[in-house]
Amino acid sequence: MVTTDFFTPVVDDPYDFGSIAAANSLSDVYAMGGQPFLALNVAALLPELPAEINTEILRGGAEKCLEAGVVIAGGHTVQDKEPKYGLVVIGFVDPKRMLTKGSVKAGDLLVLTKPLGFGVTTTALKQEKSTPEDVAEVVGWMKKLNRGAGALAVEFGLHAGTDVTGFGLLGHGSEMAAASGIGFRFYLEKIPFVAGALKYAQMRTFPGGAWDNQRFFGPRLRFAEDIPEEGQMLLFDPQTSGGLLLAIPGSSQESFLKRAKEIDLPVWIIGEAVEGEGIDVFRRESKR
Image 1 (cartoon, rainbow, N blue to C red):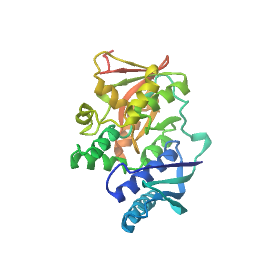
Image 2 (cartoon, rainbow, N blue to C red):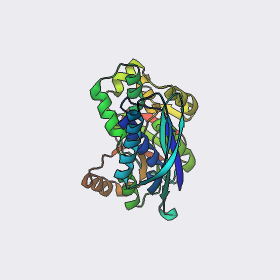
Image 3 (spheres, rainbow, N blue to C red):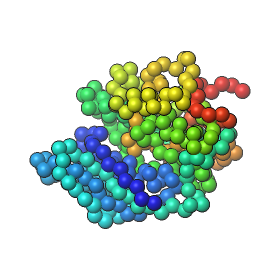
């Protein structure tokens, strides 16, 4: 498989930007249960910036690819008024073990492998409203490869998954539910968020993409009356280099979580697939 992704800086540090952009580009392969092996740089650089800044962007990408076991075999650069960076990624995926959006079954549990709140926090950074601690937490998550999550999905023979990126949890979840002809239930109290997410949501520092996601995917969604607007919007928040959303059979829950703990992979069970269509979001799971 071949994929590509690139974008403008989401953080101030050029090395972190390069690392995050590379992790985000590689994620498309991991989200299908594949293994990337070769990449090409795609970069738009500002000639007036000091050479060391452009070098740090490329170094961040190169070292993230080295961590992933991926060879950067060249690429292409152009001059632009705003820096942009990403990768063309080539990977291998077994068609018989590939993760797709359309393979969710009723009764599957919905698992997330990174918390939410990256977009609202990085926008707060751009507006000079964030704290260094909150930014450092988000940067750490965005730089984290989805390699372990993708490998675990393949190990357990899962067939349905996607990465949570620009469409937010509800946008990507809506795509999975529609492709599978199934309904999803999410429980807000089970969904993980980075430490500053609610604070910045209350400041309304959402990127424009969050409102676009709300307008486009909103008609497919149903929120419980006790979920406040900021809670709803955090589920539309665009994620850069977000985690994987996976569907696992309920019978595999215990062994899946045990194995995830053994390999130090954070996972959260945030909902379930049910007969029906669209997505229902409740504050908490009701007792049965």
